[in-house]
Image 1 (cartoon, rainbow, N blue to C red):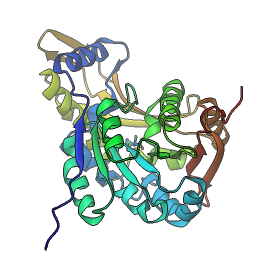
Image 2: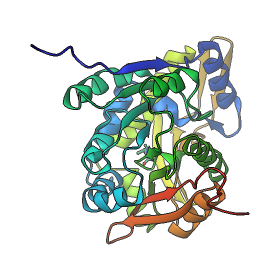
Image 3: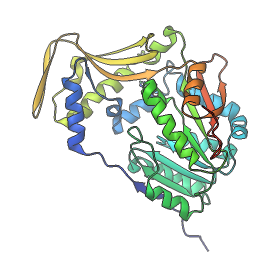
Amino acid sequence: MPQTDPKPHFVQTHLSDPSAVRAELQGGLLATPAHIAPKFLYDALGSRLFDAITELPEYYPTRTEANIFAQHGAAMARHLPASAVLMDLGAGSCAKAARLFPVLQPAGYVAVDISVDYLRDALGALQQRHPKLPMLGLGMDFSSRLALGPAAADWLHSRDLQGAPRTVFYPGSSIGNFDPAQALTLLRQAHALCREGGPGSGLLIGVDLVKPTAVLEPAYDDALGVTAAFNRNLLLNVNRWLGSDFAPAQWQHKAFFNELESRIEMHLLALHTQTVRWPGGERVFAAGEGLHTESSYKWKPAAFEALLNEAGFGSVRLWSDERQWFGVFAATAGDAGVPSQPR
Ligand code: AVJ
């Protein structure tokens, strides 16, 4: 007799409010310098363009991190609790986490992404391959605040996982989009999430490292122009959300390493003077004037370890590649009542 199909459970805790999104966009467009948040890079086309970026010869982070996981996954697993609930932040296709299932042996899998719709197919397919592993898809914008919420807590309880240790998984150097103060806030929230779980809970996080500008800049300004298309596509998204009339061809992609801030900056520069209009507003951009679309922070290993400590994590371990281009850090949250970092 065929068994009934196991099904992942889905919870959407956050739905973007269109008028709040329009207000946010308008605020950024009227500021000097003008800026738009990098989350507007990712519609269906933007996500595909990003996937293409990860295959470019110049874009080293994705393949370098994958090699580090492949080479050191077993050592990472020894530093993290067995039978933990794996909480995958920005899970997307869930592929990175799934590749670690054999070594991490999780007791549950919580895939968090801004929209459960992005998770539905990937998590459904993954559930078929791991029919016994309890899986939750959680639609949540954790860039504003990371916390599980009551529906997810109920689900953990229903699967008898409320007391299980937790491993918070945040790969891909997604933390790079946050400035150091915002990154600290997010890591503190990740620490709180760990402390709600059982003993041994911890964090596994991928972080892009400082390296020569001659390596960094081509990774964000590739010869095929894929990153340029990815950046310009943000304007199409803004047009859709705001009703604006940006013409992508009138904007030039620019990426450079800001050494002082230790970040790659992506901008779009107006090729000539133009007025951009939307319902309720307009902005004149002078020729050469820029629109800041993304920052991607690069960390030195010691500085990121200090940040982890400041967020409450201890026992920090780092795995890297032979060129030290990318780092995967594991750290433990300390047990309840026994701070890992007395201060
Ligand atoms: C998804 C934020 C890690 O900063 O490298 C890639 C995004 N932007 N190329 C990065 C990105 C341009 C990427 N992160």
